[in-house]
Image 1 (cartoon, one colour):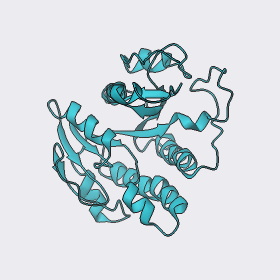
Image 2 (image 1 turned 90 degrees about the vertical axis):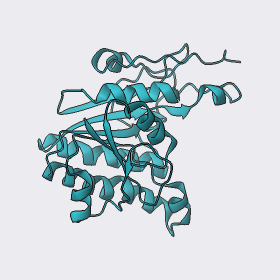
Image 3 (image 1 turned 90 degrees about the horizontal axis):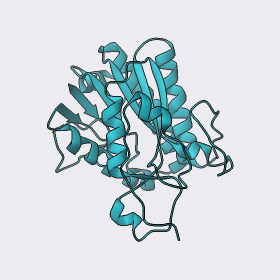
Image 4 (image 1 turned 45 degrees about the horizontal axis):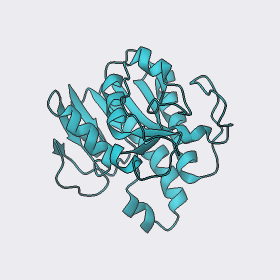
Amino acid sequence: MNILITSAGSELARNVAGALAEAHTLRLTELHPVENIVGDFLQSELGHDEATNELVRGIDTIIHIAEAPPNLLAGADQPDNYAIDYQTRCTYNLLMAASEEGVKRFIYASTLRLFEQHGEDWTVTESWRPRPSVDSFVLSKHLGEFTCREFAREGKINVTCLRLGNLVTAETAATTEYDSMWLEMNDAVTAFQGALTSPSQWDIYHIQSEFPGARFSVRTAKAEIEFNPQFVPPRKS
């Protein structure tokens, strides 16, 4: 399978690429130059032009990690607007080019922080309506989901939305305060692997590691995309 992965400079993109490289042909992209990556690299601003069509041409699946580069975000005159612009305009441009070039599947990395304002003792499933805060990261991901859903609703491309917990490595978790929304990096990678074969036109899955006290159920992801989390966190203090 020919796969395009965005946000090539992010740790998540690097880990996903490392896991997929042996079985798939990879193309990675970022808004700025990135070195030492697995697969071919093509810098792109994800604009509304032929360059974005060229970026996605020949691709079967796009994994849109959708992380605005921290250095560009920090240097922006209006960081909040920059984050929202990246998740909406750039995501729209990428989806438009993908639909025009016949890309079959689009996987969008969203966040479980959309439900931070719900009580922690509630069992929130994929059928619940998000309650995003005004935090620019959370709000921008919420708007990014809307952008993806419209393309899926119109039948232009099949979209899988993965709402991710708070990423952590097993090593970092051992020395970090317990978080009921932890998603260990290796578990995150398996979710993207499973989503590659999701057959539906529009799907949303909650993705976090599974452990006692974990805030979100991952039952649907386990059943439908064979998500099989393995992380065992340190004992809650």
